[in-house]
Image 1: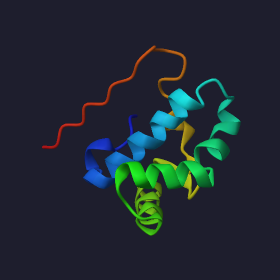
Image 2: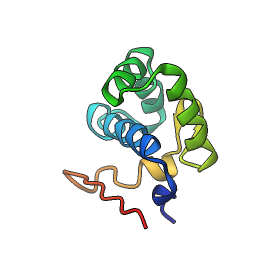
Image 3: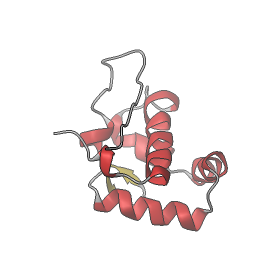
Length: 100
């Protein structure tokens, strides 16, 4: 089944999409087992917070929500069940999330 993307708050969607961007583009060539360490480096977290316009404390609150939704396994680990859905299958991924 697909992740509960439609249930995410706008800030959760922003953070999750930014994390997926890192997962699939910047570190897409790295084995899945090693990606989380790179995606969640201190530098990437700080850059993501600036890009999304949130504090690091807000980032960690959002991460807790993503974990509750099953999209993350811990504070520094995307759930590969969902994050890797599109690995090596497409050249480009677009997300369209419609709120009902």
